[in-house]
Length: 347
Image (cartoon, rainbow, N blue to C red):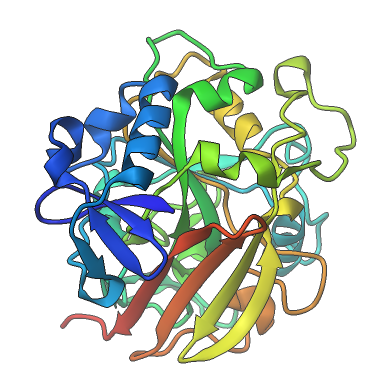
């Protein structure tokens, strides 16, 4: 049960079919979810009720021409999984503590490129950039040798804020329209060479894929569970939101084989904490802002949300590989999948 966008306007996913909502007119006949998302919680509830009860034309899901569901205003990607941050810290900084001193005090993030966000099904062209192996004297430029995926949960902002206004954790549901799956494609060799001192840039900015379906936040209220304990206790403006872990099973399929199974409930920093941190300095929100959790990895082997963790850096994506990310909430709601195929680097 989720909203998408087709050639005529909004769609509603109902099982294996999509219901054409454009006949309802108004925001339902728009080429984007943005007009609906800007209206706020009461309008979202009314729209969801109308969508669930609408007897419009039905289209089998494989036949639906899905578009990017909303106009992406800004894109911020967090680093909120304790297991993922620990795993990568050990790989990138083997002689140091895996977690940097600030990690347990705030949800670390980087600002991505909204223009590189694409809808599920869009092929990813292997990016080029500078990379330098440990045994090389100088960097070289060329196609990444270590293309990776990142399994993430994203949320999209509906109600904007004014510049200078912070959003407390308890106001999360007043501003966030819905959730979706995100694949933040990553070139690990480019990332490793460039990320000190300012963090990821070209190793991630080439493409981010999102599901074509956005699940209204209200439909996931009953899968909220307690988040893992935090130590030390966060500062006061980040101390809430601990009842916002989400029981959403996640899996990754590579060329038809499931290689990872995890759950979003393991995130150390919850989505309300992420939003509160992103606005704590007064940065404004805009309708269509996309924020992603960062890679979700669990503590059990086989629950890691990236290839660099799953295969300990021994295997990465090859040209022609097809990847599918899926999410299934504990209440039976399916989040739209994210599919992408790797194409060779361009000459």
